[in-house]
Length: 123
Image 1 (cartoon, rainbow, N blue to C red):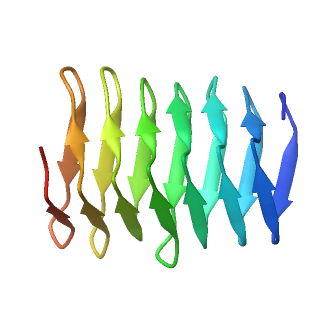
Image 2 (cartoon, rainbow, N blue to C red; image 1 turned 45 degrees about the vertical axis):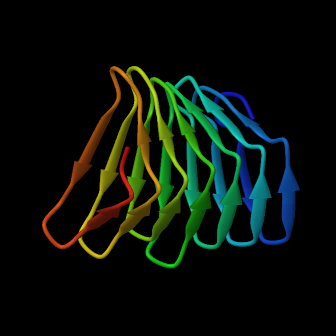
């Protein structure tokens, strides 16, 4: 999805590319999404294998993100994030009520946990 593109996924989506100005809202399941150029992916259910590079991923309170790679972008977690890799230039924010489990923070990556949020198994 390029600038101005918008997709609502209530079923299953695989291999979606969300680029500058694009937006993907997932209320079903998405796998292999690539978010770049300030694109946005908002989750209310399940996403796996998302790559966030210079874009944003919002994990809502009833959402789960698994195996996300955050590289030069941002992941905002109010739900559950499992197995996230935060690499150089990437930031994972865990808000109150959010949980990050099995996070790997590589050199140059940042993990920020709000009061009321939790991060377990951080390496």
